Image (cartoon, rainbow, N blue to C red; front, side, top):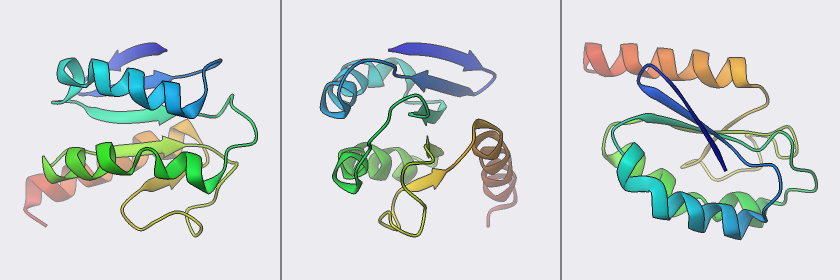
Length: 110
């Protein structure tokens, strides 16, 4: 698991572990990144299923309840397939743009 902090956003990249192992590792490290916006970059992983994405549901809900962004990057699952509570985009650029828009909305109280 690779952590890359850019301003108030932490990008987490996983290249080898299973999704379940990845979520478990994220839960273990969560305390140190809970105040950041989080981008989970799964772009290098193939054969991701909707069940894999649902593994992130609890973390995503908790993070968004704390008024922080939580975005998953993958082109294996479209945002139409995912639960409404999980934000999925196909590229890292779109994830960062989305976080910027969400931060503006939070600043404006929207």
